[in-house]
Amino acid sequence: MSRSLKYTNADTKTIIAEKGLDRNGKYWRQQLEKISSTDVERALSEPIGTYSFEKLLALISPAAENYLEQMAQSAHQLTIRRFGPTIRLYAPLYLSNYCSNSCYYCGFNKENKSERTRLTIDQALEEANIIASEGFRDILLVSSEDRQFISVDYLVELAGKLRGKFASISIEIYQMSSSEYTQLFKAGIEGVTLYQETYDREAYKYYHPSGPKSDYDNRLETPENIAAAGMREVGLGVLLGLTDWRIETLALAEHAHYLIKRYWQSHVSFSFPRLRPALEVGSSQFRYLLSDKNLVQMITALRLCFADAGLVLSTRERAQLRDHLVKLGITKFSAGSKTNPGGYSGHNEAIKQFEIDDNRSPAQVAAMIKQQGFEPVWKDWDVAFIK
Ligand code: SF4
Image (cartoon, rainbow, N blue to C red; front, side, top):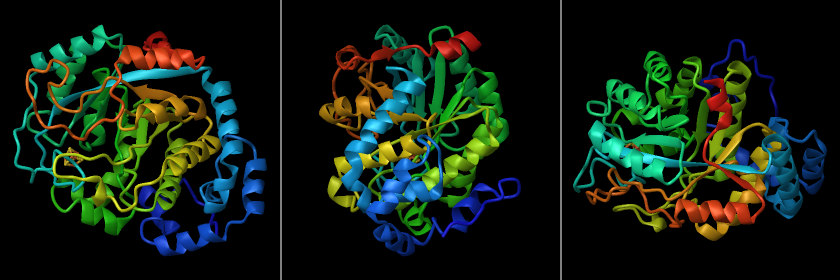
C-alpha cells in the first residue's frame, strides 16, 4: 500500500496523485473498511506525535471509533506537553465580499444577487480598533477574491497601519504568487491560511465551476508559494461536508507532511471548517457533513500524527462543542467573529460568508477557557519576542 516518497524531486501534485488521493475514493474507502482493531492498536502504540500514512489510515478508520477515549487522552497529554495549557485567541476581519468565483457553498458566490461591500483602509482600521479594544492582538484579514480592490498594495498599506496594534497579522484571501507573498511578508504579514476545500478533483470541479479558483492545480500548489516566501505559519484545511472526510484527511496530512519536510521554517496548522448555512446555501446541500464524533476523531488523529501542528477551531462550531474541544488538542480559537465586512462597527448589513454558531463575546470565550484550567492567550509572545 505505501510507496516511499522522494521529497527532493516530488511536488505537491505528485505527492497527492501518487496515492490516488485526488481521484480514488472507492479504493481508499475499501482500505479503510479493512482496518482492524489490531491495526488501530498498533497505530496507537507507535511514537506519539509522529506521522506515517499507515498510522493515520488506522486512526481515521471506522474501527478506530471504538478507541476515541484513548485517542482523546493521548491528544490532550501531547498538546499540553508541546503547547502548555494555553489557547490562542484571534479574530477575523472581513475586508470585502465582492468575489470573482462562484463556489457553491459560499454566501459570497458571485452569482448571489445581493448587496456587496468592500472596506476602505480607514473603514478596515475602524473595525480593527474594535477588535483590538476587545483584547485581541492576533488578527486574521479575510477577503473574497476581489483582486482589484483588495490588492497587494492595499494589504501592504493596511498591514503597515495594523502593526503597532497587533502582534500577529495573518491573511485568508485568494491565492497569490511567491513574489506577492514575499511582499506581504516584508510588510509584516506572517501567516497565510489557504484551504484546498477538497482534494478530490471531480468534487473540486463541481463545487468551483468558474473563476480563478476553479484551477485545482493552482490551488494545490499555492501553499508551497506561501512557505517559499518564508511565511511563519501556513494554514491548511478542507471544507468538511464536500466529500468523505476520511479520505480528505489522508490527503491533507500528506500535503502537510510534504511542506513540513521541505520548509522547516514554516509552522503548519490545520483548520476544521465544517460547512455552515449561508445565503442561498442550506445544510441539506452538504451530503458529507461529518458527525461531532468524527470531527473529534479527525482532530485527535491529526494531533497524534503531528505533535507541533497548530489546530484551529472557529466560531462555525457551537459553544458546547468548542468547550469540549479545548482539552482535545485545539490550540487556537476565534471568538466574537463577524463574517461580513463592516460587521464589528455595524455600519452596514453586508451579506455574511456563513452563519456562525458560537455567538459568545470574546470575554465569555476567554472565561470559559480559564474555567477549564487553560490560559487564553491574546498575544503570541513568541512572535513579539522574535520581532
Ligand atoms: S469561498 Fe472564497 S472564493 Fe469562493 S465564493 Fe466564497 S469568498 Fe469567493
